[in-house]
Amino acid sequence: MSESPAPRPKRIPPYQAVAAELIREIGQGMYDSDPFPSEGDLVARFGMARMTIRRALDVLREQGLITTRWGKGSMVVPVDQRPTSGMR
Image (cartoon, rainbow, N blue to C red; front, top):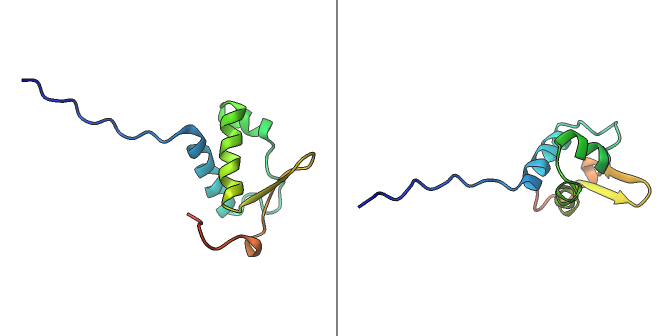
């Protein structure tokens, strides 16, 4: 009998990897005084599809870290206005 192969390591979806990186940067205060990058800037930076970036931004919005206004882009929510529950 042959042995079964070792289980593959779980792979994190690309949008979650992008979200995790952006969450780390927001936590470090990287965007406190600078505008948050546009979708196009993030597509170029991470080399991923626009839909992947949108899903990552959805994660940040769901966690209360950014707000987005059509025509204005995304902005980081000030620390004192962020929700305290559900943050990772």
